[in-house]
Image (cartoon, rainbow, N blue to C red; front, side):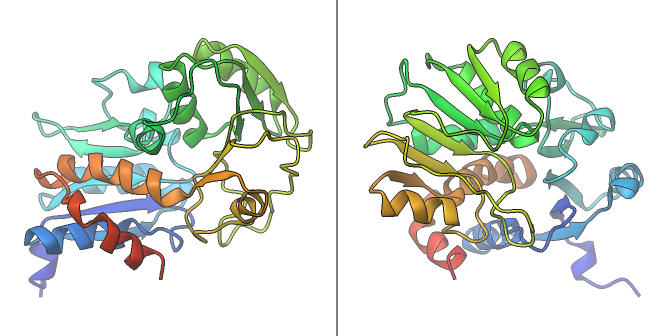
Length: 276
């Protein structure tokens, strides 16, 4: 027998691993506040099962879409439509929905979510360091390419791949190994999963070269206060945690999934819930 719950509209987040995701908490919170009869789920999808999972969802009338997290943001580019040209611009997708013709299409809400907490910061001619060169880094570099920033330094294990990203987004800068010394930038962004719960590798860097007033932005949100942010706080630097980007990108996705704007007037209550 099919349960009543399974007949409700639903969206989901897919990734591998997925236990660290706080997206269900966010979307369920907003659904409850708005009184929308729908669900939001977390689903672990192995890379070898990604294509079949997407195909199965395309035939599910109750499915409203999904958020895509590590490691699928690049792989889904070849599995869904791309009317907005995300593949050629950002090069990574984090949101899939059903288009007007019923076929699945992808977009990216990470770029907008990343920029939102920086909207009041003056980044004109600011030098910036981005750690990582995966799907999240692509969205961040895309956002930076729309600003009048200075040099962009990418720290990653594959500098050659990083050079390709600088070229793709028309940014001037340099690419160095992850183990290199942090440059004296005004904004440092950890766009890698290093420091995330469940990831064995750590992000072992020294923030001493950063000038006073610099911003350290870690997109990792579980744990909320990462070792990187702890170090930044101990040095009196400005910090932005991963919840800002997570909530920002979820806001954009929520309306695509459920047809109503997220009730952002409850952000303070939501952050307390997510911080537990």
